[in-house]
Image (cartoon, rainbow, N blue to C red; front, top):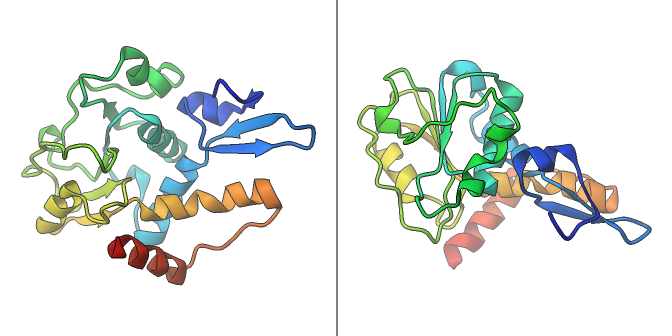
Length: 209
């Protein structure tokens, strides 16, 4: 965010940019499309998903986690709990979006196992190269949706544990795909369509690795 000439309001609220546009005069403009990718992925993979179906828990307060929070806030105004499980994170990293939007309550140790039984959503924002969260899903509602924004592997330990309980799951590949079209529109004036064929190609490539 510090190397671009202008940052839009969305990226300022999220606290991170995911897209840089080089303008005709050579200046750099920064925005964030990850929240659009997150919502687009949910809509594509789980068409019946509703943000207001129940409380949401977001685990992770990095740039990706804050983008998820921003997306959820765009669809609902309450019932969102968020926190950073990594004690190594700086206080500056942890406060992010909830310093901008006070409608978001910050929980100290948000955990699906500690949510009430009618939880509907549980979102884990973690990078694939970090160790898996030690989280017990025994009390997670059978109707809850578990989403992880990483896509390598396609099924994280968190999603595998949720799937074993027969919970619906969504990985992060679609978030990567759906954040692309708005970037292409800004760069080239063309808005590609995310198709099942494109997703299958990406999945095949990831599995091949």
